[in-house]
Length: 100
Image (cartoon, rainbow, N blue to C red):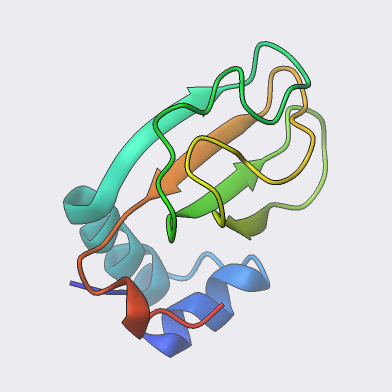
């Protein structure tokens, strides 16, 4: 199951309603590729599992907002990592249906 455009929009503004939560949980159960906690500020050290097209939800270690990154180069996050932040890697066979 790919995330609907509506769920993506709600995720982007950080809405945690039951509807969005259930849809996201279902999609994550099918498309979760990796959970990474950064151990350095390198874009590559902890990110060998990344594949082109993966969607990465960046959950900051300190208070702040989550954001999304789309992987353009395998094994490279594409931005400096933050030590202690959580990186949730989503991969879907229907990735082209996702709109970020």
